[in-house]
Image (cartoon, rainbow, N blue to C red; front, top):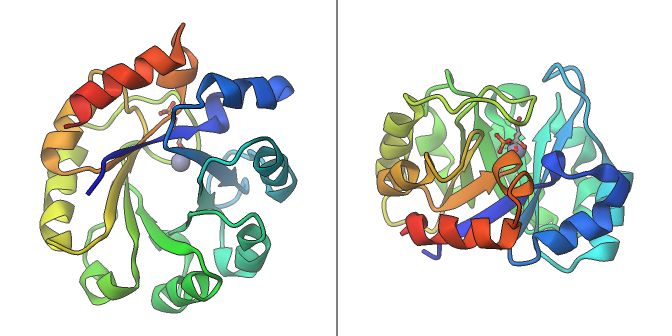
Amino acid sequence: MNRRISTSLLAADFASLEEEIARVSTTDLLHLDVMDGNYVPNISFGLPIIQAVRRCSNLPLDIHLMIEKPERYLEDFAQVQPEFITVHYEAVTHLQRTLRAIKELGVKAGVALNPHTPLTGLEYVLDDLDLILIMTVNPGFGGQKFIPTMVEKVKACHGLIGERPIELQVDGGVNLDTIGLLAQAGATNFVAGSAIFQAQDPQEYMAKMRSLMG
Ligand code: DX5
Ligand code: ZN
């Protein structure tokens, strides 16, 4: 499977979103962190901002919903025709139904797991999944420190996925120091926000990431 970089716009300067997106134009996907101040302590942005992103870029969008009961908003977010909509394992009661609903909207379905959430249960919904997101920090904020024990979890998840065409995404504290380990553990999709936007030359930084991604 092609390994991909998904740049998180959470670390961008929202006053110049169009220019910020141009600075990361060689990314494979744009990662959009929607936070509701309930499921996670922080509030970020919602559909109007994502629509604005869609107007200034043709890059595939990767929407990470850190919200309670995300099933209420799937149709709204599907309007921008993202490649992925990812919901949190801990925030939905009927995960399989929610994944089916995402796919019925013509969007690939992802599930995200907090650091302490076990992989248990995912084995029953693998056929409905296009992406598994292993959170490598506690969700809610950019710029946090990577949790090293997540490398073992990525390995276990890689084993669970086997040969299935499911992307294994990691998110939180991904940078040039951590990406190699994660790639070796089997991650195929790397979300990074602050590391890319704080680099003097984000395009050069992504090229370095690619050289370590395997
Ligand atoms: C955290 C978000 C991340 C965040 C990552 O809750 O899900 O996508 O933007 O930020 P960095 O790369 O700065 O750890
Ligand atoms: Zn995210």
